[in-house]
Image (cartoon, rainbow, N blue to C red):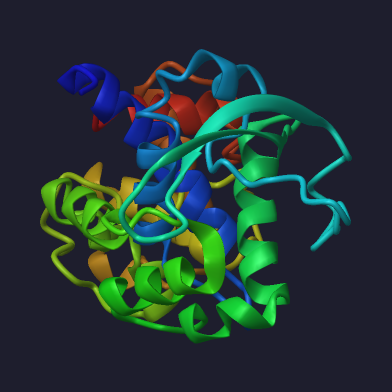
Length: 257
């Protein structure tokens, strides 16, 4: 089992990506399940071969090398894995797995695969984590008879359902009084006119700084939000341009870590 710091750091790295890549899809699956599968498949980011290939979800290349979207660029690597075809006996096999340019592409390809393959259709827009992973497992993602329980144990142990609100609209165990931003960290620059969860992430930070009312977390970066961003940047010794780029975003985030 990975050390606590490794586990927490890995989840902190993967969770916002899983949320961002799930958000805005008509056919989505739960970020909590994705995060738990990343934890399981890559041993919390401690599998050297998988991490070198950014292959944190262990998706096989397949004989047909199907492209579900644009995230996979035909890279692959060979490795041994265990399969349980009869529900009892594990056998060692060697197979080709997808390799990616970065973790973001790996997670995007995972969501694209689930949305594109009819065998996974029962996991789509499913709000219950156990039902979601059951549909994924039964769709052929894994052969281990304990896979569903393994993923659910990870979800429950680390309270991963708190990340599902970006697709379900439910707050779960997250409330606005907690020191955890319930919105996915932006992967693009946030500025005047930005809308959606990227805007809400910034507005949540501004609210926690005491610069914005809770009602101001409305998902639209308007003049009030820009003014609050400038004040926060000044207090933190940043260039107060009212734009949340990489430096401002990382500084905002570090305050709550």
